[in-house]
Image (cartoon, rainbow, N blue to C red; front, side, top):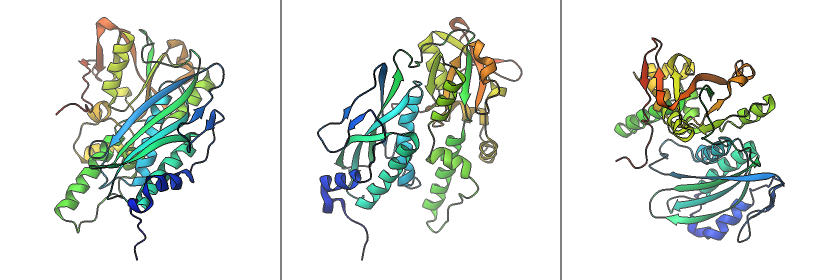
Length: 344
């Protein structure tokens, strides 16, 4: 007897009720969550609300051949929280919209929502609403994230100035190389379905691809240090693309030094195995969801020894352009080669 429940057996409202039973509210600004026509929120006095939305579309952003539903649910929340973090704000609520194909079971949707629940718990975020509908194609997850920032204190992309230090959290390139591993193993499996995937050697890069974390830890640590970034963005499309976004918004150029770019040893090993240039993986791989930000030169002593922040360069006058500086001191113009949804 099958333990799988077809979606049409419980219907949309039955599914929503099952999801609602797993939702627990944590935020004092949440007055009313799931169950009515709309949620009710009450931001504290002196706070501004920041809002961001991301879509994850099957076949574009994820492949269910190798992406576990629980990880996918977690990642869907994390990438939205990352946008809130990039505004130097604290995430508070999310709204989740799902378009689900009929091939999915109730249990599969609950597995997806378990990942969402775990991420909400990790980031102290409430699910306060959403929508669920059928899909005639693949799975689509749309999440809107809300957060709070002290009035006038949200950090934008546009505040950097010449001589500001350019910094990045964590390390880069791992998510891209995790995707290369998964794609290779998928191709091997398609060629021979009896083949067992060889994934045991790659825990670090697979984690970076399948279950990234938003860097709220660094947002809190910068506050503790009394450091306010002058500009900030999260790295979703690749470091080069994001540096250029900061430069365009701030009206500056930038110098990024190759010898300062942070890469983890497991990532470097996989790059060598795939015969890929690790610098290019860091610049253009994307999906790292680290934070790229600028701080005044005066903040140097406060961050220079932080174990999870690397100063990779500095901002310069717009006339100098945005350049990668090689170990030999040669400037190479930065080019955005990250993912573009409208390239065909």
